[in-house]
Length: 246
Image (cartoon, rainbow, N blue to C red):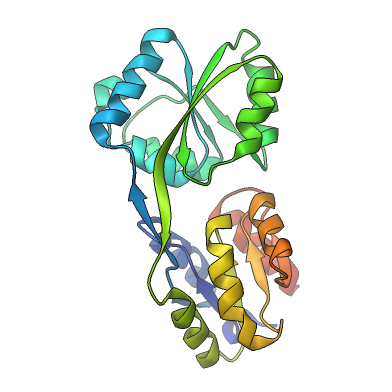
């Protein structure tokens, strides 16, 4: 299937959506943006900075498991950020912090939270405490793996993903206009909306997943998963789609 004949349905929301569209458009795909979720901060900037100051005071690692979490934390005071031991999962999360000129203590390559936890345990053998800032539907396996290793884990809900009104209907309408399409699934929180929209297509619309956690949510919802990114990044998801197309 030639890229020129294939429409990529980008379901990503927020400031990261444009970057996703650009990556696929530059590769020759038609791209339609249908944002499904709205990210709403649940921990204020002031409250976030109090958490970060406490982490700096106690020498804890601050773990950010997604580009969205990194983007929210990047809004904190630059001088405060420079005092932290920040660790992030994936190159996408690292990019969200680069404009702050913050030096990252570690960038994980793990494909999920459990793998990232193992990386941190190897990289920081004296690790005692980790502060996790993530979404309401965060990666539970990350904290669980650290706790099983005897690490103190302090979790904070930084933001929530709220479904945009009419999102499933908008996605369904976009698919009806496309001759042939693949839907990009970027988060487990969006999978339920995607599944509702795809009910009308009797399993004929393939879904490309950003990673194993999202893939599991797709499979649990009965979606036709055509490929999965090797890491949580736009470039990896593009490579997976291109490899699938041959």
